[in-house]
Length: 188
Image (tube, rainbow, N blue to C red; front, side):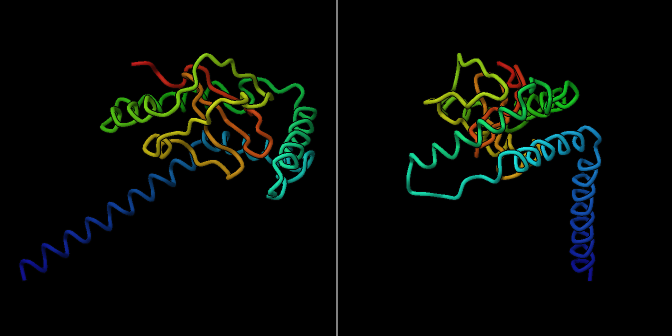
């Protein structure tokens, strides 16, 4: 009877903590900064789709893929000719991201994240420009999963990329830098 009571209490605590986690996740979705970021990302994708079409269909022809990507990039660059750093990552959004990244790097998984970043193919000395292609021939350094889990999810067409100490928002279909945060990755 005592064991059943202890197990029952443990299950209730476990269920309650699961509910708390889902509420915390829900609270994150209600954060005005995150809602603003999501709206800006969605507006970009709607504009791209309206003006440049959907991503090209998969093909075995590298030339055809490059041509389609180039055409899409040209259309996006044309309709976003006035695009500048901070259009997506506003100062408030950039500060939120810097805080999340800094907290992750100083947290219990910080050493693992830094080691993962160090062992990946770091991309240093590259000047990023909004609405310009991701630098040709440069590795696409991805975000370690433990760090990625602290950042807002992106639609499948976009990815976060680390370029030096910057965090870039990369449109994979057009290969364009949508926006970036300077000095987002603090140096140890």
